[in-house]
Image 1 (cartoon, rainbow, N blue to C red):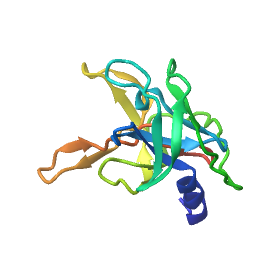
Image 2: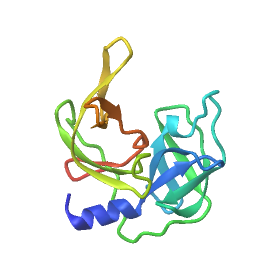
Image 3: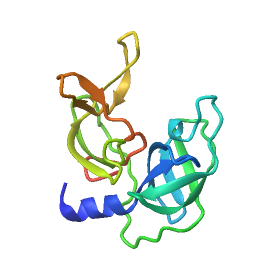
Length: 166
């Protein structure tokens, strides 16, 4: 990903935390006051919507946010303070994106709380416990010292850039 695209992406991406400061995932501004993410980033273990949430860029708090529901896969958070960005990247639909295609991601994984770009991530299957695939997804895995793969948690809701669209 080129440096200009990465700068724009980094500027509109935030980490979502609950009011206790626990990282829940990543989201990104689609307008000055609206953050897009995935619903499981704003839903607690008991199924209730977490509200309010705090939005961070690295260790710096951007503002508070108020989730606007989580009935579907995609969720939105209303930001209490506008995040003005003149050259915000537009959100689009990537037609034909599927298994084996590559994308670039910027997010806030738990192991890199200041934000982290991942380039050339391959889209693989979203696997259930029984091993069946439910559809294309990105599962970021990192090898630990013993050689086993560990999930790179915290990237849920991250913007993905493929075919020049988010």
